[in-house]
Image (cartoon, rainbow, N blue to C red; front, side, top):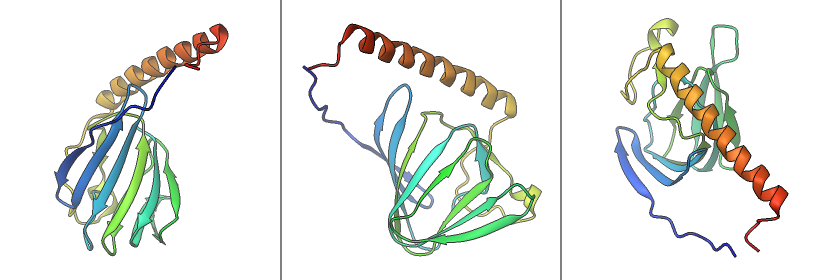
Amino acid sequence: MSAPILLSPVTLAREWGDEVICMRSETHVGKILRRRARTKGGLQYHAKEELHYLVSGSLRLRFDAGDGQLTELDVEPGSAWLVPPGAVHQEEALTDCEVFEVSDPTEDDRVRVEAQYGVSGEGDALPSMTKADARRKLVALCAAFRRRAAECADAAMTGRFGV
């Protein structure tokens, strides 16, 4: 029989607030991002996919909808958005915010693009990576998803569901 697992969240101090990593596995990670008012992350894209849910506060999303221009959208609590791999985006806290994020566990995969869009490089100065680095991270992630899918298929075929 399976039982709930008590986790030990880890809090990382960031320029814009705190990043609370609630859980991490081979295939996904869950975080709470606590952003201080009037702070923003870098204008960037990355290899991973992210799902965001705004728990509290007001936030401005900037993104390229595919036309090479930045679009701004203000979101309120209860809003959710998906950031696909390769999507140029930025989040700016208009007030103190709390955002829940679920993504694959790829780390340090951002490519900063402020210069390409002619905007200031203000914001969280986490490092940028190369396309070759992104490709290597995606290959490793695909292998992890294949392993996890095989484990799930095996559990389904053998009836091992922990009950």
